Image (cartoon, rainbow, N blue to C red; front, side, top):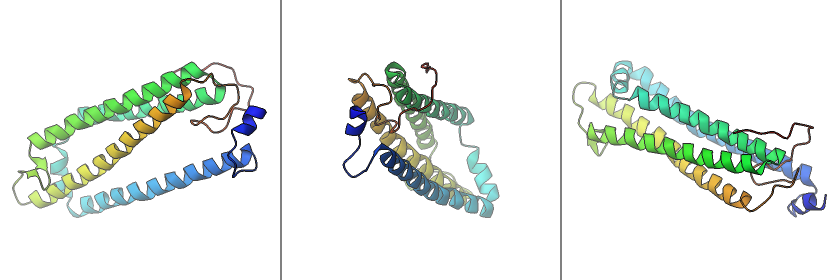
Length: 202
């Protein structure tokens, strides 16, 4: 109990209030992300509706294999992050560290594949404003497609870079500790209160 109380910040009355504030803050953050990316997807949808043929032609320049692979990698990194949270809650230090490291690795793989995609777009002359070589009647709407493509994937990549950095900080904070049972940790601000099995895999 002493360790638990020591982990409560001075502005909170107890651990339960601190956990509630942390969860509320996370939901607010997620809501802002939904609004931000929702606006970008809305813009994409609107322009796709206005220029269906041009957007269909432009989309043929995308690499389905690389995009599909990156989707699997992204889902995998989400899974390892969830397992890291589970490891923190259950007091499984090794699972926590391994899953955090895997999350960072998968995030880096995602960025690497995205960099390959972007290089291909540069070589093919599909970068709006810098190197766009498509011509024809629908060249303008196709350039708009790739502007939205780079804006959306670029912002996502920036989020991912920040996320990898944050996970790295959490990994560094968790590394020297033995994760005492039910002690709050930066990765999961609440400990498990259920009589779960002490197993966790990654």
